[in-house]
Each structure stands twice: as structure tokens, then as C-alpha cells.
Length: 249
Ligand SMILES: C[S@@+](CC[C@H](N)C(=O)[O-])C[C@H]1O[C@@H](n2cnc3c(N)ncnc32)[C@H](O)[C@@H]1O
Image (cartoon, rainbow, N blue to C red; front, side, top):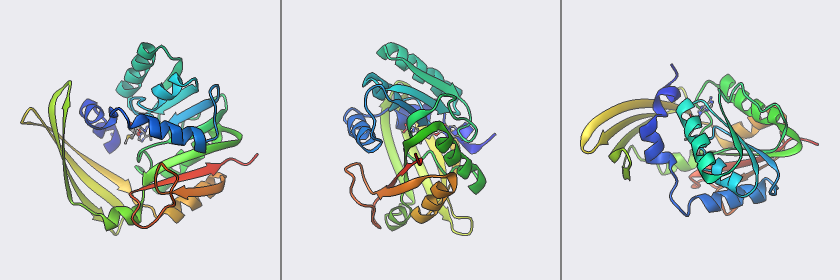
């Protein structure tokens, strides 16, 4: 089993993927503007998690299809779409293999869902984003900005959240494998003060120019880089790296 199949469980969903009010709208505004889409456009959320962006985007009148490897997340996204009364399609599959059969107007891959596998696997995820798009369609990829992460490096992070599963405390211990170019994390959860579970993750660290080269290898053109949701330029301290790319017409 891959580390990501183990990591993405219910505890992580409740602790990190349920978005606070006020967090969703600026992200959706950015996507709508930068992907150049309007209600009725068909949009593919690659690695959609529990659908916490896809469902509210569908509620704005977009035709959504989302994929995630976590079957339980896909069930939750479908249930939330039903509750919200929106039509959206959610598929449990490997995003390195899956692209919707009917072409989409735009694709997004959000919040560091990229870089989990080998370089070849990561390239395949970008290739599938390209395959999904109609000619002229745009792709937005939101991931870590390696220079910013290293400049603000924190070994230990402790976060708490009250969830339906209880009071969840998450301790993340981070290290960098410089020889392999990967960020390693140990994730330890405590629920209501008791040890619950421990997971491990290993994400490939790419400089932005390497991701640009991978996007070009997938066939993308017109690649722009941003450091935040206001469309500010990417710089050394930006914590995020948002790449916008277009499939040629
Ligand atoms: C950090 S979460 C972000 C989820 C979502 N994009 C969001 O912003 O809420 C990363 C997600 O990527 C999914 N994922 C990672 N690798 C995947 C793969 N190869 N195929 C499908 N889903 C994948 C995980 O299951 C997880 O839900």
C-alpha cells in the first residue's frame, strides 16, 4: 500500500480538509478568474479530497468532475454534493491514470496533492491533467514553493481542532532528505488526549523551474507562476507556488 493511501484517513479529513468558512471563496474566486471559466464550464478537480472545493464550485453553477484515490473521500464528496443539491461526478481512481472521458474546460490540482510518487508517476499526473483538457483549456497547480518552505523551515508543527471525532491534536515532525530531494513527515494523532495513530509521508521537492519543465513535457504552454491567491508574483519567501498553464488551441 502507498503511504498516501494510509495517510488520507478520516482523521486527516476532519483535521485538515474540512475548510473553515472564509477560506473557500477566495480560492474559488482565484480559480474562476485565472482558469477563465464561467458557470456552465466543465471543470476537473484532480485529487479532490472530500470535495471541499469541488462541491461549492458546483454550487456556483459549474459542471464538476473530481477524482481521488481515497474511496471514503469520494463517498463523502458525493454525499455532500447530494446534500448541497448540486450535480457533480466523483470518481475513486489513481489520478496518474484517470482523465474524464468527456473533455473539460479547466483542471485544478490543489493544496499539495502533487509530488507523492516517483518523478515518472508525478509526470503522469500532469499528463492526465493535459489529456483531460479541451484545446485552449487551462490547468492550475497549487503546491509547495520549495525556496519558501526551506527559508521558513519548521521541524515540528502542532495543530489542534475540535472535530466530530473528538478533540484532535496532530504533531507533524518534518525532515528533508537532501540526497533524494524529498520532504519526510511523521504524523502522530492524539484524540481526546490519547494516542490514536501514526503515519508517514514523503513528498518530492521540486524547484518551480522543474515543475515548469514537467508541465512543458506534458504539452502545456503559456506557464505563469504566482505566489498567492491575490495573483502576486512568486518569490523566495512565498509559501505556495501556484502554476497556471494552458493546453495549446
Ligand atoms: C492534501 S490533500 C488535498 C485535497 C484537495 N485537493 C483539497 O484541496 O482539499 C491531497 C489529496 O490528494 C489525493 N491523492 C494523492 N495522490 C493521488 C493519486 N495518485 N490519485 C488520486 N488521488 C491522490 C489524496 O487522497 C488526498 O485526498
